[in-house]
Image 1: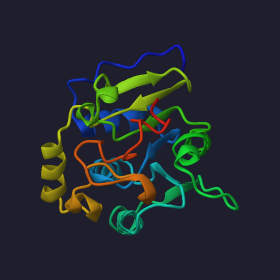
Image 2 (image 1 turned 90 degrees about the vertical axis):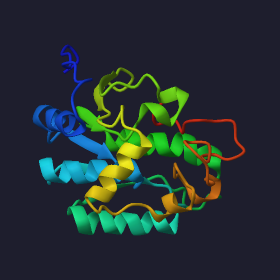
Image 3 (image 1 turned 180 degrees about the horizontal axis):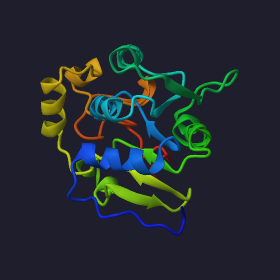
Length: 208
């Protein structure tokens, strides 16, 4: 796969990008899921294109109760079996530094073992660090392809699709949480400003 290139899919719709990813990479394809509004859309699209597609989540042990409820709703609505990558630290006190760093990155690497492509909910308008994201791009560090079907979607696009299809979504979005991470360090806020509230960081290591 390293010597191959991807076609230019920048003008393609999200379902078209997902269909391309399934055709080219499945079953060596997986979707990262954090049960936010982006994944409400992607899980619905993916379940219609390839119901047996792999989906994983990283469980830090400190997820919001609302996130756990959304997880159950996803499995019931979309018929997805979510693979759990354990990023907890049994016997050790929880710290944001370890959680949003080595623990999550280690869990991600396990999830991506043997994978040729992974689907994410990255959108360009989420943060300056994501403004250059392409719909299909090479993750050179891991030697795999990264699929960002919603790269050019806006908040309005997401909510329009969610309401049109009556999809389950994380209830925290109705309480001012635009981006949702772990309970101890996520606050309400626009964009990703509520993530790691009071900390000088914009990513957790997964997309860096």
